[in-house]
Amino acid sequence: MSKETNIHTVNCTAFQDQKPGTAGLRKKVAVIRQRHYLETYVQSVFNTLKLPAGSALVIGGDGRFFNPEAIQTIIQIAAANAIGKLIIGKDGLLSTPAASNLIRQQGAAGGFILTASHNPGGPDGDFGIKYNIANGGQAPESMTDAFFAASKVIHQYQLVELAPVDISKTGLQRVAGIEILIVDSVTDYTRLLQELFDFDCMANAMKKGLSLQFDALHGITGPYATDIFCRLLGAPNSSVLNAIPLPDFGGGHPDPTPVDVPDLYQLALSSKSPDLLAASDGDGDRNMILLPGQMVSPGDSLAILLANAKSIPGYRDGISGVARSMPTSAAVDRVAQHLNIPCFETPTGWRYFCNLLDSGDIGLCGEESFGTGSSHVREKDGLWAVLFWLNLIATSGLSGNQILANHWRQFGRDYYQRYDYFIPDSSQADALFNELKLNAELPLVELKERQLKSIDNFTYTDPIDGSVSSNQGVRLQFVDESRIIYRLSGTGTSGATLRVYLQQLETNTTQHTNNPGDVLKPLGMLAARYARIEHYTGLTRATAII
Ligand code: G1P
Ligand code: ZN
Image 1 (cartoon, rainbow, N blue to C red):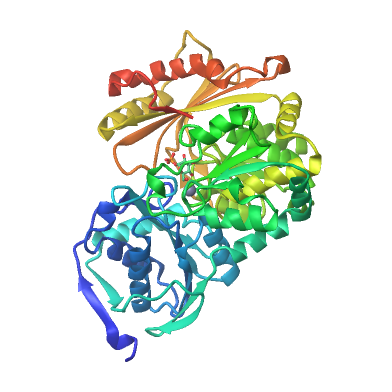
Image 2: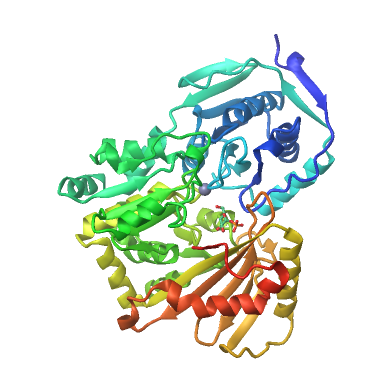
């Protein structure tokens, strides 16, 4: 039976809500499972991209509920859209950084990554799909805007009806005229990390007693972490917690923050703390680094990785430049200044780093939301960040806390916190934000609490392709170098989340034992008063402080 004769055209009505956010299309499972929903979106992507016949695509996901069904659907639509080859992680599993690596390594035209990152999974949880391009990074904003536009007018899609393809065994098969290559999810990614880090040095340090506790939160990183930490570095199996990926992440919220991983955080605060503790999220791109007694704030982590990069084999020749998302703390800026390399400030979302990584202008980048990465892939990479810290501790012979203290002594310390306000009625969030945007256009007002230096609504012009992204967050800069930033989340699946980012620089090293929560409380209160959060939403306190 020829491939062409088997193609079915299915008529459908366009959905109007398939707008990709900061990290692709993300919806409640019940929404994604509606008849024709996933199909129309995937077809809209193909209609937009018009990939050459025979193109190769990668498919994989974080193993959440609906992952297997979604993969079969994508296979059927890809087969009808002249795709020549599909490279799929065994059992449909690929961490987001591993998928990015596979796209690059296989020279694929792109790939579909099935994840809602750190959002809960299961039948009542969230699902997501994002398209990554040939460089391994997320489709740029102009492209996802085009997907959205196509999804609003689509009235039919094509598919080849197939019996479910067996994706549980590695190897090549030919189905409906396309090649399907099932690959081990872990091998290539592990090999990539072995090229960057000094595994012998880390294994030796672990043999001598350096201890690690990693929590995979029943997300995708379990198999990767077990391979790297246990098989290659000799850590005991007990050093990887919750290592089996589960469709509902065991009912938890797979987000590596002290709030969502309280047991690990408490272990770090206890007298029994291992030398390094870490967790990653559902799809493996985020990282939380804990040391005995404290968490390393993601902004500090990025700054420290940059400051010490030359002691890691993969970065021995130095870093050309660095980038951080606008709300991320300015800790890395001072290191870049010290190293005399450029530091770029981009909108929130990893995709804004990708042009700079491709051009070689930057070698490291990060976000306050527990995301750090480098040019080795085009996604942030949780396990990469953990290995970076482990390698730093192992080669320097210093404890993580010593590394952190030395850093603050040399560069100063940025106290940093994010207040998240969950607002069920998103129209309230819009009204609040509209007032903030308006304020950003008016002359500066005087605040009784502290002196404002400037206020604006961040606009970014990509230095490589000139594209402009406006309305990326309202920021208040104060004369004393402290800062408040407001933005609305682009990854939620219901209501709205107002994110308020607080930062205050402290250069007096004797003050460094302070708790960020105490230091930043006045700034948090000012932020709430300035934005009239209670007036618009009725909320008198943040839903979460991270
Ligand atoms: C959040 C983070 C952002 C990150 C994104 C995807 O987006 O804030 O830094 O890139 O998740 O992991 P938000 O919900 O704030 O739009
Ligand atoms: Zn993620």
